Image (tube, helix red, strand yellow):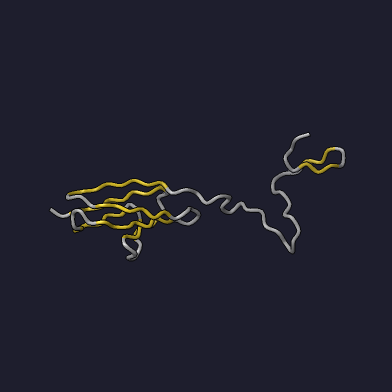
Length: 105
């Protein structure tokens, strides 16, 4: 009996690469693997930290579930322009001629 890997990943847009081969969309199903063999999965998705995980294949179906971690401040990182600090985004409220971008007093 050969081994199979079924790899489920969150987010649904993730891609799975087995042993450096071309990535496939999750959920990924890899068939006809040698029982007892070691493999490496590379899980990736835009805006998430990639994850490398070693797996060992047993005879029959092997199910793995993973969740990727969102990159810190992905898409929300303050940018600078020529060394000037970025202005906070969002609504601004003016109180006593002081600009308060967080809406507090």
